[in-house]
Image (cartoon, rainbow, N blue to C red; front, side, top):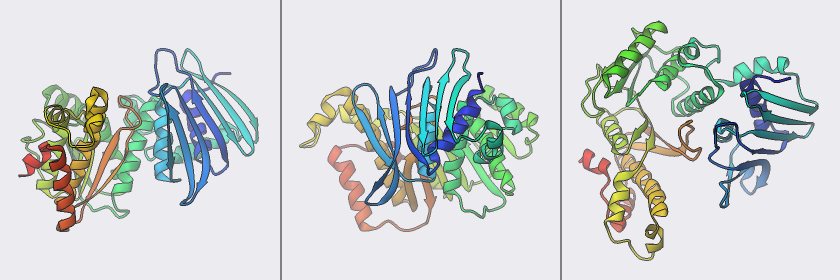
Length: 378
């Protein structure tokens, strides 16, 4: 008998992250969808630095292997795979086997063998696994499909890992380039649920988005705390200097504009998920490649991928030079691949060291590029 797919994938998630996992494989595709990889295999491994979850993905050309640490890193990686539209999952644990096939209607046909707890007995645990309750009114407004819930949960886990356990109150948040704002609202609901008095402003260049998002805030009964303005990332007027700045999938140098404004505000925390990296890619195309790296930029696809890495490396370096501690981690979004990155920064106010300055100058100078963020920060 078919079961709701989101419930079954939640069950699969528990098995993938549990200590008893022995092996799991995801493959195939759902009707009308194509995963970014053709196959994924997971298994626990013990390495010199301890126990890891090994994930091997294959894009049809070659396999890619990574070993992630149990906890938030493994959870984010598993959530990214569960968001992919695979048609089949096969999960083996020490005591059970679960096989899942997604039907044409989007339900799940499940075969369970061994000591698998019934779905009903797992319901309480499934509810606890989400940082924002799947029954939250937000999902009634924006739609509550499984992929969107996993995306929101992955974002909130990254947010939780960035902020201290004891939140400041009031906590002032600005989301630059908020778009349709469902992550803006998710951040508000989650942070308010942790007991902080949260004030949020979403910024988007489109007036129709401001109107729409303001109406959603009214429906969620949070319009007093969550407001929206129409304007550019660089110039939109907001009523306060924020503690936390979000910039999720602002395209190309719009990410740099958001980072520059966060630095000028001296925001305590910044979460930025870059999207598109045309600026540095164009500079690489128009300049001589340093020896011995000509092969890296000779082919367009490799040059573009390298430009992504170089751009975000330079952004992280510039944030460090301006008093931030920076982590670069994976982020999940349904419109992007699981390899998408999140720049997670915390302001320390520390002066940059000579070594950090030299390292940044050498990297930018060797490749002959000037990042947009460097120009914006002067």
